[in-house]
Image 1 (cartoon, helix red, strand yellow):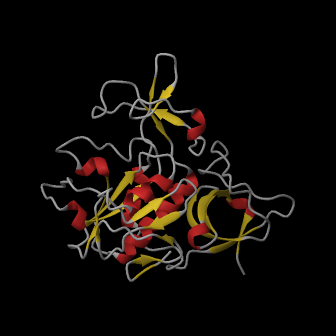
Image 2 (tube, helix red, strand yellow):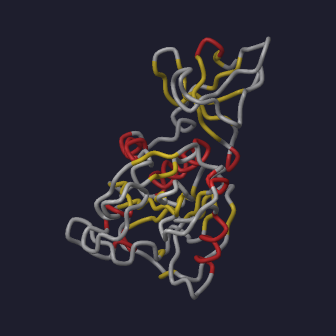
Length: 284
C-alpha cells in the first residue's frame, strides 16, 4: 500500500465534511474502535455534518479500508485528547477507526448486553473470533467481555500503519484513544482485546517488505492446498481466506522457527498469516 498526495492507493474513498484544512507536524497515530458491529454506521456518521466527528480511515472486519479524510487535513477523532501535557491531538495525529463494538456485559441470565446495556444477539458477534474477559476501571467494576479482532482486519490495520509511517516520517508514537483521554477517562478503545504491541513494533520497522526486497516465496504443496493460520503454530486457527493453492506467490514478512508470516495478494484485497515454512520455496 502506498499513500500519494495524502490518499491511500487502492482503497475505497468517501470524503467527510468534518475536517480542518491543514495540520501541525504529525507525531501520533491514534487507534480507535468504532463501538459498532459494521463499518456502515461509522462511515455514515463521519459522512454527515450532524455527526461532528471523523477519522482518516475506517477498517471493516473483513479488512476493507475506507479513507474519509486526506492525510494532509485534520480529522475530528480525538477532540478532547491530551498527550504528554499537550492538547490539539487531532492536529498532531492520524486517526484510524477499527470496526469493533467494544465491551459487553452479561445479564443475570447470561444474555449479552452492549456498552449501552441493550441486549445483543450473539449472531451480531459472528465476524469476531471470540471474546475475552477483562476488567477496565474506567468502565466500572462489572465484569466485561471484549470481542477479538479478526486477522484480516488486523493485517489491514498493519498495512495501513506501515503506509502512514512511510508517508508521515515525523510520527513517533502509536496510541489508543484511551492513551489520549487521561483527563476525562471516558474512552477505553481500542481495548484489551486489541494487539497494540503488534502495531507499536512497526515503529522500529517502518519499511514495507516490498520496498526492502522482502523475499517472494512460492507455495509448494502439490498434493493439497497450504493452510494459513493466525499465528506461528498449529494451535492457531486457520484463516478463512485460506488455504493457499500450489504455485501461489507470497511475500515473506517474518520468520519464527519453522513458521513464516506472509502477505498474500496486493492492495485492498491483501491479507497476512502464518504458514509452515517447509511448504514455501524462493520464487524464481
